[in-house]
Image 1: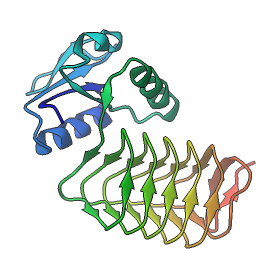
Image 2 (image 1 turned 45 degrees about the vertical axis):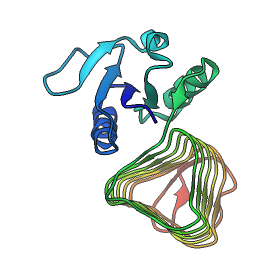
Image 3 (image 1 turned 90 degrees about the horizontal axis):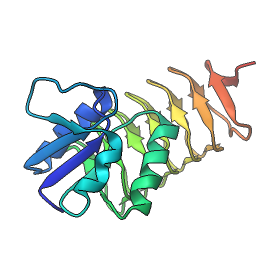
Image 4 (image 1 turned 90 degrees about the vertical axis):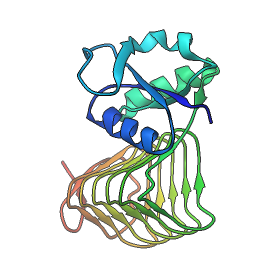
Length: 204
Protein backbone atom coordinates (compact mmCIF):
# COMPACT_ATOMS: atom_id res chain seq x y z
CA UNK A 1 0.00 0.00 0.00
CA UNK A 2 1.22 3.45 -0.96
CA UNK A 3 0.23 6.60 0.95
CA UNK A 4 -1.33 8.32 -2.09
CA UNK A 5 -4.66 7.45 -3.69
CA UNK A 6 -6.11 8.49 -7.07
CA UNK A 7 -9.84 7.92 -7.39
CA UNK A 8 -11.52 7.79 -10.80
CA UNK A 9 -14.85 9.60 -10.42
CA UNK A 10 -15.66 12.54 -8.17
CA UNK A 11 -19.40 11.95 -7.76
CA UNK A 12 -21.14 10.95 -4.56
CA UNK A 13 -19.90 7.37 -4.63
CA UNK A 14 -16.34 8.51 -5.30
CA UNK A 15 -16.41 10.97 -2.42
CA UNK A 16 -17.62 8.25 -0.03
CA UNK A 17 -14.72 6.10 -1.23
CA UNK A 18 -12.33 9.01 -0.58
CA UNK A 19 -13.49 9.20 3.03
CA UNK A 20 -12.84 5.46 3.40
CA UNK A 21 -9.39 5.88 1.82
CA UNK A 22 -8.57 8.54 4.40
CA UNK A 23 -9.67 6.22 7.20
CA UNK A 24 -7.46 3.52 5.64
CA UNK A 25 -4.43 5.74 6.12
CA UNK A 26 -3.94 7.47 2.77
CA UNK A 27 -2.23 10.82 3.25
CA UNK A 28 -2.99 12.32 -0.16
CA UNK A 29 -6.19 11.64 -2.08
CA UNK A 30 -7.02 13.12 -5.48
CA UNK A 31 -9.87 12.72 -7.97
CA UNK A 32 -9.67 12.29 -11.73
CA UNK A 33 -12.98 13.19 -13.38
CA UNK A 34 -14.02 14.43 -16.82
CA UNK A 35 -17.00 16.51 -15.71
CA UNK A 36 -16.60 17.64 -12.13
CA UNK A 37 -15.09 20.99 -11.35
CA UNK A 38 -12.88 21.22 -8.33
CA UNK A 39 -14.96 21.56 -5.16
CA UNK A 40 -14.15 22.92 -1.74
CA UNK A 41 -12.84 20.48 0.80
CA UNK A 42 -9.72 18.47 1.41
CA UNK A 43 -9.81 16.42 -1.83
CA UNK A 44 -9.17 18.05 -5.19
CA UNK A 45 -10.00 17.19 -8.78
CA UNK A 46 -6.47 16.97 -10.15
CA UNK A 47 -7.32 16.23 -13.77
CA UNK A 48 -9.32 14.25 -16.30
CA UNK A 49 -9.77 10.50 -16.12
CA UNK A 50 -7.29 9.83 -18.91
CA UNK A 51 -4.60 11.71 -17.00
CA UNK A 52 -4.27 8.59 -14.86
CA UNK A 53 -0.99 7.56 -16.51
CA UNK A 54 0.76 10.48 -14.79
CA UNK A 55 0.06 8.87 -11.42
CA UNK A 56 0.92 5.21 -12.09
CA UNK A 57 3.71 4.08 -9.82
CA UNK A 58 3.31 6.80 -7.20
CA UNK A 59 -0.41 6.35 -6.44
CA UNK A 60 -2.75 3.49 -5.64
CA UNK A 61 -5.95 3.61 -7.71
CA UNK A 62 -9.62 3.07 -7.02
CA UNK A 63 -12.60 3.36 -9.38
CA UNK A 64 -15.21 5.36 -7.48
CA UNK A 65 -17.99 4.99 -10.06
CA UNK A 66 -21.29 3.32 -9.22
CA UNK A 67 -22.43 2.62 -12.78
CA UNK A 68 -21.48 -0.97 -13.53
CA UNK A 69 -20.40 -0.75 -17.18
CA UNK A 70 -18.38 2.43 -16.66
CA UNK A 71 -16.68 1.00 -13.57
CA UNK A 72 -15.75 -2.17 -15.48
CA UNK A 73 -14.38 -0.22 -18.46
CA UNK A 74 -12.11 1.88 -16.27
CA UNK A 75 -11.06 -1.16 -14.27
CA UNK A 76 -9.99 -2.97 -17.44
CA UNK A 77 -8.14 0.10 -18.73
CA UNK A 78 -6.25 0.67 -15.48
CA UNK A 79 -5.41 -3.00 -15.08
CA UNK A 80 -3.97 -3.21 -18.61
CA UNK A 81 -1.94 -0.06 -17.95
CA UNK A 82 -0.29 -1.54 -14.87
CA UNK A 83 -2.00 0.66 -12.29
CA UNK A 84 -2.18 -0.69 -8.74
CA UNK A 85 -5.92 -1.12 -8.08
CA UNK A 86 -6.76 -1.64 -4.41
CA UNK A 87 -9.87 -2.38 -2.36
CA UNK A 88 -11.34 -0.05 0.25
CA UNK A 89 -12.95 -1.42 3.41
CA UNK A 90 -14.52 0.94 5.94
CA UNK A 91 -13.17 0.37 9.47
CA UNK A 92 -16.76 0.05 10.74
CA UNK A 93 -17.54 -2.85 8.39
CA UNK A 94 -17.54 -6.32 9.93
CA UNK A 95 -15.55 -8.89 7.95
CA UNK A 96 -15.73 -12.55 8.99
CA UNK A 97 -13.05 -15.22 8.79
CA UNK A 98 -11.99 -16.72 5.46
CA UNK A 99 -13.55 -13.89 3.45
CA UNK A 100 -11.84 -13.33 0.10
CA UNK A 101 -11.83 -9.73 -1.12
CA UNK A 102 -10.42 -9.27 -4.62
CA UNK A 103 -9.18 -6.09 -6.34
CA UNK A 104 -11.22 -2.92 -6.55
CA UNK A 105 -13.90 -3.88 -4.01
CA UNK A 106 -15.68 -1.19 -1.97
CA UNK A 107 -17.15 -2.15 1.42
CA UNK A 108 -18.98 0.71 3.08
CA UNK A 109 -19.71 1.64 6.70
CA UNK A 110 -21.95 -0.75 8.59
CA UNK A 111 -21.65 -3.58 6.06
CA UNK A 112 -21.37 -7.16 7.32
CA UNK A 113 -19.60 -9.87 5.30
CA UNK A 114 -19.68 -13.29 6.98
CA UNK A 115 -17.33 -16.24 6.83
CA UNK A 116 -16.53 -18.08 3.62
CA UNK A 117 -17.78 -15.36 1.27
CA UNK A 118 -15.94 -14.37 -1.92
CA UNK A 119 -16.23 -10.82 -3.28
CA UNK A 120 -14.92 -10.70 -6.84
CA UNK A 121 -13.20 -7.71 -8.42
CA UNK A 122 -15.00 -4.41 -8.75
CA UNK A 123 -17.91 -5.32 -6.46
CA UNK A 124 -19.64 -2.87 -4.11
CA UNK A 125 -21.12 -3.76 -0.74
CA UNK A 126 -22.87 -0.54 0.17
CA UNK A 127 -23.79 1.11 3.45
CA UNK A 128 -25.36 -1.24 6.02
CA UNK A 129 -25.74 -4.09 3.50
CA UNK A 130 -25.04 -7.66 4.56
CA UNK A 131 -23.75 -10.76 2.81
CA UNK A 132 -24.01 -13.87 4.95
CA UNK A 133 -21.82 -16.98 5.05
CA UNK A 134 -20.49 -18.88 2.02
CA UNK A 135 -21.79 -16.51 -0.65
CA UNK A 136 -20.19 -15.57 -3.94
CA UNK A 137 -20.62 -12.10 -5.43
CA UNK A 138 -19.20 -12.09 -8.95
CA UNK A 139 -17.41 -9.29 -10.80
CA UNK A 140 -18.82 -5.75 -10.79
CA UNK A 141 -22.00 -6.59 -8.92
CA UNK A 142 -23.48 -4.11 -6.42
CA UNK A 143 -25.26 -4.92 -3.16
CA UNK A 144 -27.02 -1.61 -2.50
CA UNK A 145 -27.71 0.26 0.72
CA UNK A 146 -29.51 -1.93 3.25
CA UNK A 147 -29.79 -4.97 0.98
CA UNK A 148 -29.44 -8.39 2.62
CA UNK A 149 -28.05 -11.57 1.08
CA UNK A 150 -28.68 -14.73 3.13
CA UNK A 151 -26.32 -17.69 3.35
CA UNK A 152 -24.97 -19.75 0.45
CA UNK A 153 -26.16 -17.40 -2.29
CA UNK A 154 -24.44 -17.14 -5.68
CA UNK A 155 -24.74 -13.76 -7.39
CA UNK A 156 -23.56 -13.52 -11.00
CA UNK A 157 -21.62 -10.80 -12.80
CA UNK A 158 -23.00 -7.28 -13.30
CA UNK A 159 -25.91 -7.79 -10.92
CA UNK A 160 -27.48 -4.86 -9.07
CA UNK A 161 -29.37 -5.62 -5.86
CA UNK A 162 -31.54 -2.57 -5.17
CA UNK A 163 -31.75 -0.80 -1.82
CA UNK A 164 -33.48 -2.86 0.84
CA UNK A 165 -33.80 -5.98 -1.31
CA UNK A 166 -33.52 -9.44 0.26
CA UNK A 167 -32.17 -12.64 -1.24
CA UNK A 168 -33.13 -15.74 0.76
CA UNK A 169 -30.62 -18.53 1.36
CA UNK A 170 -29.38 -21.03 -1.26
CA UNK A 171 -30.39 -18.85 -4.23
CA UNK A 172 -28.55 -18.43 -7.53
CA UNK A 173 -28.89 -15.23 -9.58
CA UNK A 174 -27.57 -15.24 -13.15
CA UNK A 175 -25.46 -12.50 -14.74
CA UNK A 176 -26.83 -9.10 -15.80
CA UNK A 177 -29.83 -8.83 -13.50
CA UNK A 178 -31.36 -5.82 -11.76
CA UNK A 179 -33.26 -6.56 -8.55
CA UNK A 180 -35.53 -3.66 -7.63
CA UNK A 181 -35.55 -1.82 -4.32
CA UNK A 182 -37.36 -3.79 -1.63
CA UNK A 183 -37.75 -6.90 -3.77
CA UNK A 184 -37.54 -10.33 -2.14
CA UNK A 185 -35.96 -13.11 -4.19
CA UNK A 186 -37.25 -16.54 -3.10
CA UNK A 187 -36.23 -18.73 -6.05
CA UNK A 188 -33.34 -18.99 -8.49
CA UNK A 189 -33.15 -16.39 -11.26
CA UNK A 190 -31.99 -17.99 -14.50
CA UNK A 191 -32.96 -15.32 -17.04
CA UNK A 192 -31.38 -11.88 -17.04
CA UNK A 193 -33.64 -8.86 -16.68
CA UNK A 194 -35.27 -6.62 -14.10
CA UNK A 195 -37.06 -8.23 -11.16
CA UNK A 196 -39.39 -6.38 -8.80
CA UNK A 197 -41.90 -7.12 -6.06
CA UNK A 198 -42.50 -9.55 -3.21
CA UNK A 199 -41.81 -12.21 -4.25
CA UNK A 200 -39.62 -10.86 -7.06
CA UNK A 201 -40.88 -11.42 -10.59
CA UNK A 202 -39.50 -10.34 -13.92
CA UNK A 203 -40.75 -6.98 -15.14
CA UNK A 204 -42.44 -7.23 -18.53
